[in-house]
Length: 204
Image (cartoon, rainbow, N blue to C red; front, side, top):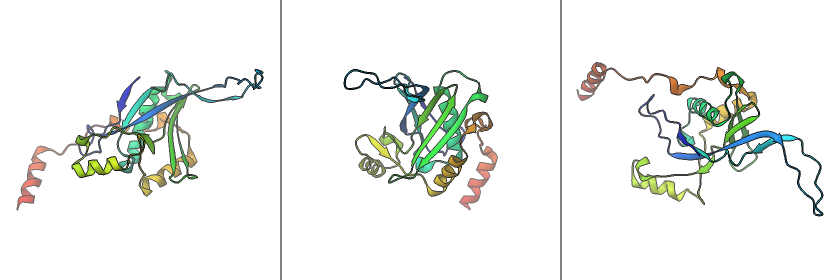
């Protein structure tokens, strides 16, 4: 079992904190086990399909609230998901995204596939791990708790981000090797002299 976080704090100190834990589900493309009928006879074999691997699905990935996501958040999550499937070359991995608009709120799924394995998350609905220190005020923390239902914390994407996800879903899958990992960028920090000059200007 592993527990990682997608954090942009080192790249951008003002970035949203990864305060919510999502379950990472791992699937294998394999033939499903035939089921026995009422009289004990086995049903015909089922064609190959994505079958969840219970043993490999005991992982969590902490991310920022989805209403703070940007395309960079999406890119970083794809690269993090790549670590949850068996060893493979980066050029063999494909990043996927799907948006299901049939339900009350769009259901988004993100995944990475390679060599018959897939790691997937559903960002809209995931288990929460809300802490007081993750919120600026007690009121904001209490408000977040009131939105929680039976351990599942639901968030809505912003309309611009949802539009990006829908556009990407129409073109999915993508080669992961062609997607930049924003967490590998060097942090952009304002030089001290420039920062001091800016602060002095504000004081005038």
